[in-house]
Image (cartoon, rainbow, N blue to C red; front, side):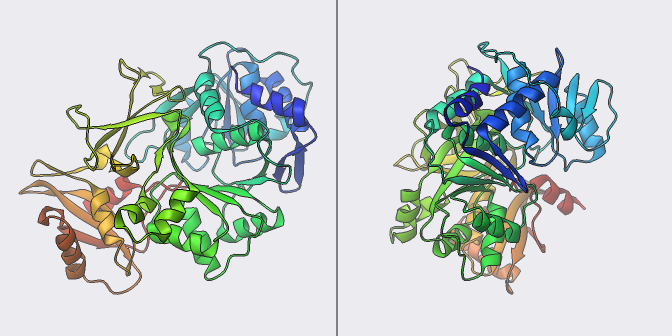
Length: 483
């Protein structure tokens, strides 16, 4: 099935329901459907449809329009440098490019949003070709050069059908979309909201103040945020946050500091919080820590339950998940290893590299973590981030979790630094809100973990580098240590 079917169903059954709000623009599902058909008519045979802009009304129209035209939708990161964008554009030719940036590349035909939305709508039917590619999405590249992930219609439809009920949203429901179009959560947000019949409210440029104002003005009921966004919102709110219409906040894209989610739950006691863990290669969410789990962990005095507030939750019903050792053996509860997943929504495919699924359909996420006895997944970090000290594997996450318990530590990242004796040792980049000595830091790590986890070098920073979707840029931190 083709993802355009989601918009077709919405326009045919609730066409007059408001679908999209962006600034002064307000569209119904019927109007959005007509826009998508107009976009489809502008896509030439064999062309991909690239998108280089912030979240605007043309974004969902382009996503569905590309599907209707039977081609791939390729959103690009408008925050990249011109050289980086040129490198990615050369990998997707031939393509029509929606955007305002003027970058000349052979095989790329630029077209503005206003131009692509003018013309006669396409009368074609969406192809239901099994296995067709719907989206080509560059990964974030936080540890190296980005790969081009391939998401097929079958993957995305499996995710939607497995997690969303058709027309499940009430007419007064609205979701505030702040994640950029080139992030899998941005794609999934449009697909799931369309299928549910929920009004989408776009905020192209996030600031905490703008988010709070728009959420109040549009009586927003649902939102998805990355951890850095939620942190800025609670910092801005200080002791009060008046959003009576808000019902649900989902978050993901990076590790959420426990202090941040606890503060948000205190400020918004009527809101249901959900941690949604997923990857580009899995068509979004594969694990969820739901509202009841949040409340149980927040209110519990049992340390084993309390710590679940820092977990990714449990696998959604359509996903199988397991943790294996580096040697491929199945790990037991509390044993850290590599996270593997399997399910129809899992693509695990890269352009030029083919499928990365094993013979039984399992995909290696390259995240390290462990399951507790109840099946809650705890992510320790990326496999590439492991610090190898004298042959011993050290997870940055275990050190970071210990230090975040200190009242004076706002943010922290552990990375590998070169060591002449051990090969690698622990380097620590840390942001403090009060005076915390190196001796205090080392003493806390030594008291909670083995002495091999004690940092050999500590660097104070005003803030840690994150990308716009909430992932910490460890390679940038490593480079700063190298300097």
